[in-house]
Image 1: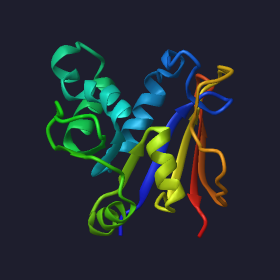
Image 2: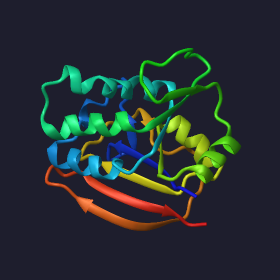
Image 3: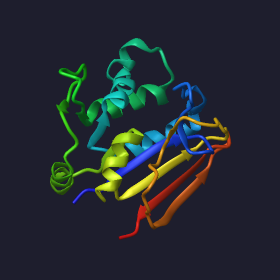
Length: 186
């Protein structure tokens, strides 16, 4: 059985976007980006809600439109090589390869996907991750804590849930970002 990982870049006060919906404060520098690339390289399937997918689909063509540094282009290839499942009752089509739409989040179907997968799965977006956390499907949490307090916005973890965690690893980067990797204790 593969593991399901929830990874997010957050502010110190635990938000993925600020009250205006902006996450410009979360853009990783080269050191963090290269580290993220290595963490994401093993992912076989990304699970996204509509908004997260609409943010991430940029990577489908990023290598064709960007004259960016190698670490940015590397991430585009990593993203393109993985399967994507988008949970949306609104979207009727996707604009990326290896992508399918599911109209609703079905915990039993995700559990079956985990059981059949050969590579790790990653879930993106706090709302979808909340559903997976409540269904006890998430095995690992990774938080990239940026040195900024934004004072409000979307919280990376839902209210009303308790998780006992074991710290697996941690790292501090030159720009002040701290990576924390936890495993859910069952």
